[in-house]
Image 1 (cartoon, helix red, strand yellow):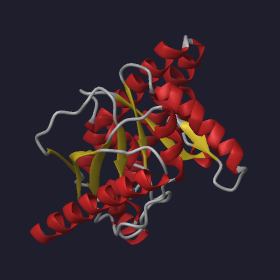
Image 2 (cartoon, one colour):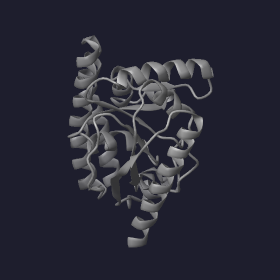
Image 3 (cartoon, helix red, strand yellow):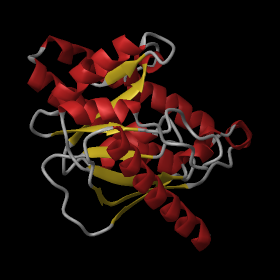
Length: 249
């Protein structure tokens, strides 16, 4: 019953905030990105409260005790569609995040599609032209270089269905770093994959903890090898944190 209530409430929240996100498209670019991010965060606050009540979702935000620089590229593992709003929520006091996401998310999803399209995020057609994808990433790098914004990427390229961490791919990151060089801010997320399990959703027994932790900075040396080395270091940090969290259970 809780799952059904959450689904209905989430849809109501999305539809209620959708007009505000859509209206942002008529604002100047800088104000548009800031304003649509504020709409997304306001909706996220309400979703979190409902998820806590209806399915027992608990957000646990942790910090590793370091100072983030003015410019960085957020790199995270990927487990759920919820990772995007949750990470936006996690960093709300530091910066607004602009994400690289698959093109399909820009259509048909109340509020989320509008936030991604209007807010300056990069929507990449993974089956399309590599040249077009690189051009879009270039434009994204320039947008995310504006004051108050950080670019964010999921180097796995797709969501993990079981919480395991996949291979990290460097092509997209290299394109962004070439135009907006910055160190990597490595973030681990865990628990989101549990919200995508059909058996749990149908049984109404989803209750889970969604954990997020910024682990530290990794320097990014220009060039192909530099990007690969930085991502390998980031992946190692995330894998170690996932292992530590699961050892606590």
